[in-house]
Every structure is written in C-alpha cells, then in structure tokens.
Image 1 (cartoon, rainbow, N blue to C red):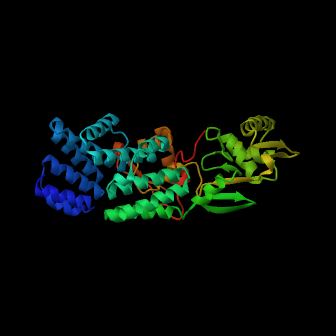
Image 2: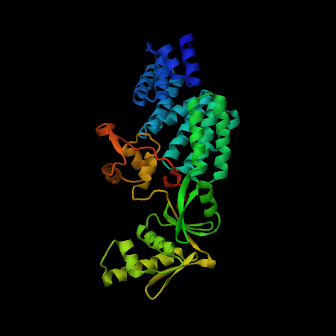
Image 3: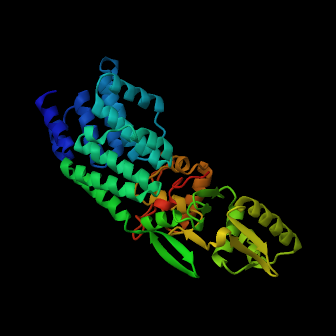
Length: 406
C-alpha cells in the first residue's frame, strides 16, 4: 500500500471520511476505489459507495481474492444501511470464508457482526445470537468492540433482558470512547437513552400507566397474568400463549382483561370483535363459539365464565389481570416502529422484516402516507420509505419478534 492509501486508511479508521477522500479522490485503481467507497458510506452517500465498492471488487477480480472479499463485505454493510437485503448470501458467505481462510480475522469478525445486525433488523433473534455468541470482545479493536457490544445490547433489549443490555451498553460506551469515532459515541448514547423512555402502557385499575423497559421486564417476570398487546398473546408467569395468528380471540381476551374484574356485555364484545353495531342471533352464537375456543387456549391460566349479561375473565390462583399495550397503537404499529430509525426502507425489506407480503406492506404504507405519517422518495425499484423520527418513547416492543411466539 502506498503512502496515500495508507493515510486514507488511517483517516477512515478514525472516522474522518473527508480527510480520506482528499488522499484518494482522484484515483481509480481498485484499492483507492475501495477506500473511496468506504468514505462515501461514512458520509451517508450509500448508493455511490455501493457503486465504488462494486467497481473495486471487479477490479481486484480473481487474482486478489482477499481484497475482493473485503469489498464484498463492505458492500454488504452498505446494502444493510440502505435496508436492501436482496444481496446474494452466497457471495457474502464465500467472502467471509475467504477472509477466515486467509487469516484476516478482523474483517471476518466484521462480516459476522454485519450478519448479526442484519438478523436483528429482520427480527431473527436466534440467528443473531448464533453469530454474536462466539465473539470474544476482549480480542477486538475498540471500534469492533463497540459495534459488537451494541449488537449484544440490542439483542438483550429485544429479549427484554435489561440487565444484560445495560452491561453491554456500558462496555460499548467505554469502547466507543477509546475508538475516538464520534458516530459510535452518538449511537451508544441513543441506545442508552432508550432505556429511560416509556416503552409501553399498562392498563390496571381503570387507568393507563407508562412503563419503561425495565418495568416491563419486571412485570413480565412477576408471574402476573398479562394480556400483551405488544406481541399479541397471554403471559402467565413463565408460560406464553401466542395469539398473534388468532386476532379475533385476542381482541376478546383483551376486552375481558381491560374490564376485569367486571364482566363485558355480549353486545360490547360483538361490536369490538366483529365490528358490528346491530348484532343478531347468529352473531351471539358465533360469540359463544369463539369464547369456547378462547377458553381452551387459556385453560390453566384463566377461566372465562358466563354472566347474566356477558362474560367475565377469572384469572387462576386469584391473580389480577393486566393489559400491556404499546405506546402507540394501530394496525400499522410495526411499520411505524421499523421506519422510526430514520433510515429509508424498501418495500421488500419491510415485507421481509415483518414476515408479510409486499402487497400487505404496500397497503399499510399507503394508509400511513395518506395520514401524513410516512413519505416516499424515488420511483419504481428505487423507491424508499421514510418517517419522521419518533421521540418520547422507544419502539423496542413494537419491533417484530421481540418476544417468543411459542
């Protein structure tokens, strides 16, 4: 590596992209193209960065597989920043294998961290854990230590393990200070701030109460009977009854829990679950059928008894019933949560993260756009979706698969 490339690499390691560009901006050889691509990525010019990294990879070609693998890993990270998850996993896996086989441990670990962060974005928590668990933070540079600790903190937050998240964030903060990269310090500070923001609302005794993440974790670990509207299920001590695929039954359960210890009239349950104002006898029959199905699902955790005018929830062991709701509600809550990071997402990436069809996501985005809550930039395949950053609360509990579903 010549002196200009060496100086550009040192500037990039320190987070000074502009200084790096001053050294290599006029050069088109593959090493300079790679450094220019990384610099443009640090400046937020992701499309240009991706183009430069692809040119660099083609320039290195088969005669320099190690440098080509580094470019592929860097391009994968840029694609993740663009929320484009359509890159070939075979190319990425091959690049990572090349880095490991040729002893480039730092970049091989970087590739593993990119995979873990992508899994976190898509809600694949077990896959993310598989990537993160083998990493020894003590053996990493301060910059990689900070990135790895941030990923572990996010994984812990998504699992509502606040103690582990706090420990990981403390380590990330120390590593970020040692790295001297301002963007890393800002990211750690933002993650730490999320711990102190309201994460959910608790309904009990006829009122709503804002809860922070550690209070949510305490509630879910207390053994209380909690109807969780964040993940659409019933939490009863260590047991979890998923109802995400049974929305009508969950609506009935939530209505009964919100009214506890009082009963809910049949007409009110029909109106809420079936969205009907003028029910007839067929709807009352259907209500009895659905209540019977719900009884079977929650058996052992709670009972549902008929009263003169409706039905009442009876928690087992004399426990009370509580309802945990997200800070914002609506059918598009998960979409809003994903867009709340301020990054532009493609429709395909949103569909992949939510486990829904692109058509479903497009309908949801259309509703949000008409309400003025999101906006689109670009056209056709280049179209991306943005939303204003949400302040005042954290969206952790709105993100996909934050809690187990079975």
